[in-house]
Image 1: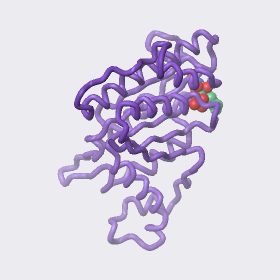
Image 2: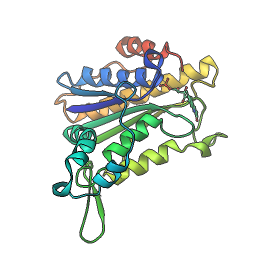
Image 3: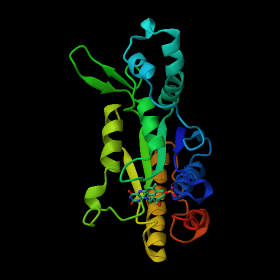
Image 4: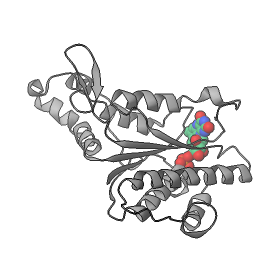
Length: 239
Ligand SMILES: Cc1cc2nc3c(=O)[nH]c(=O)nc-3n(C[C@H](O)[C@H](O)[C@H](O)COP(=O)(O)O)c2cc1C
């Protein structure tokens, strides 16, 4: 399996979403030792802002683009190639002001590309090209936005991710949302991180299931064994 792993948080080693995404990759690698990972850190590799040339270049047929247009699209072209080359996509990010961090929005703006991640048909339909991939979003939130909580209606992150990636063919992405973290008591935060690690362990089992001929049970994130040791890394970070 080839995995594209994207981290977004600006908080470096103190980031919960990074700790959880790395926990997931470790779990997956335990099950699939041949796992190949292409890693992208959107806090380190800042994407160029949308420009006037980009907006016209992206809607200009490839054979009519000027050298300047090609140069401006080069980063976006390369990101689309990385997405298309992967079997599975892992995107980790904090919620910022109820939606995705600006760095991830810039990434979305770069990867929604006609002729690459979606195609327009002659009869006016749009067809995404990423439909064959497993996709997991790991999000971290300061407050609890689960259904039934006072902040539930403020979740503009989940629908925005579903819409953008649905358009490029990802019909049924998986979500692990760790919440509440920053604005919660220590016990609630620890429980939220443990819940997230348990869900991630289950998804790693699921993703690896098809590739492993004989299923060998692996330690789960239940407070003992390997996953607990890995989990203590995530549990020890600031929310
Ligand atoms: C600029 C900024 C805006 C934030 N906005 C929200 C928000 O709208 N809702 C929320 O629940 N948490 C919000 N948070 C809290 C983060 O989502 C939370 O601390 C998360 O765990 C951070 O993940 P990270 O450690 O991977 O960066 C915000 C944090 C920052 C720094």
